[in-house]
Amino acid sequence: MQALHPSLVLRVGLAVSLLPHLAFGQGVVGVDLVQVQLIVPAKITPGKTFLVSDEVENTGDLPAINSLTGFILSADDTVDENDLRLGLRRVPALRPQQSSSRQTPVPLPKDVEPGAYYLIVVADATGALEERTKDNNVRATRTTVVAAKE
Image (tube, rainbow, N blue to C red; front, side):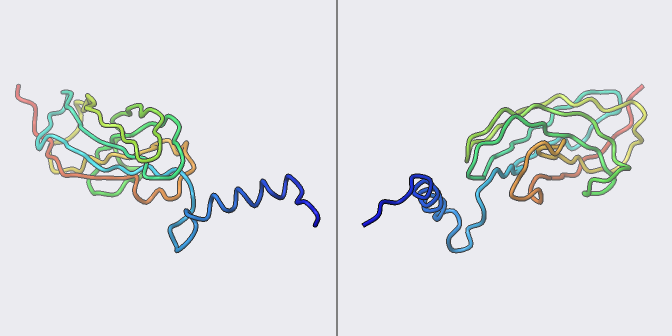
C-alpha cells in the first residue's frame, strides 16, 4: 500500500476540521461583529457631551482585530451621507464569542436643531474587517435634541 503525500494529509485534515462549521447550513467560518446593545439618553443638548453605552460581540468563529465603532445622528434609522458623524470608539481585538462594552462620551455640536432623531451605532464603522455579514453591525434608537437653556 502506498503512503499518502504529507501535503494531501494536511489538506484533508484541514477540510475535516472545517466540516463542523460548514455542515448543515451553519454558514462559513469567519469574523462577525454584532452590535448587541445601545443605550442613549432620552434627551440630549446641543453643545453638550452625553454618554452612549454600547456592546459589540464577535459572534463569529475567528478572532477579530481591533476595530472602531461609530456614533451617528440621523433623522431616520438608516445611515446615509446626510447624517452627522459624532465620533468613534476603539474596540479591542475580540476572540470568538467575546464582547466589548463601553460608555463613550459623545459631543453634540452646538448647531444641531432641536427635534426627534435616531442615534445610530455602527460596529466596524471604517469597514476594516472582512466579516461574514455586515447586516448586523448597526443598531439605532430614538433620542430628542432639546434646546440649550440660556
